[in-house]
Image (cartoon, rainbow, N blue to C red; front, side):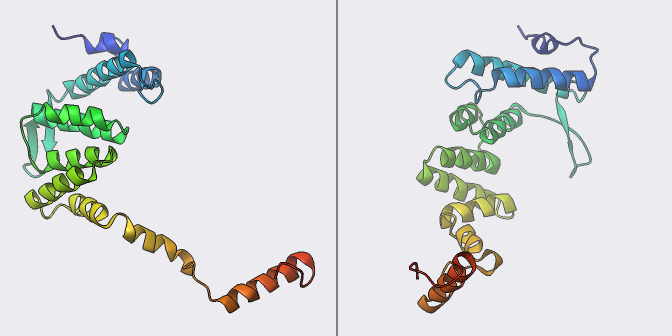
Length: 198
């Protein structure tokens, strides 16, 4: 039997959106897995709270979502709900839970492989993560998020390191003459003249 989502959140069915959000935040602070590491009961309660909140949020839409490409409401499939839940777990760095949710879905589309890759990458399983990300890109080659994630996985963050290293013109490489000149100048400014450090 389906639980009453309002009862789970501790609000009345005629509660305002703000009251519902406030109740959800209060319970999330109480049961969030990051605040209760290793507590299985808290994790289960957090899942109940998330499901209740999502059910209330989708109540007015009747379990549907707006598709901007078709310009109308579309029914939200169970697979889509599972993928949204997996994305939430990934955001909270709960990668194992994300994979558990993904494994319970039937549809293996590009989004599924993308989320699976992110979860495996978060768990340090780079080979499987890279394989799944490549599969996501092959299924949706125009998706920028997938392409960027694949690039990050393949290059191991080298592009970021190169950009960060040249931030404001600093490359971290100086010749010995520049090192000595800098040492002499700092000694002059800080110590009042040349000293033993140079």
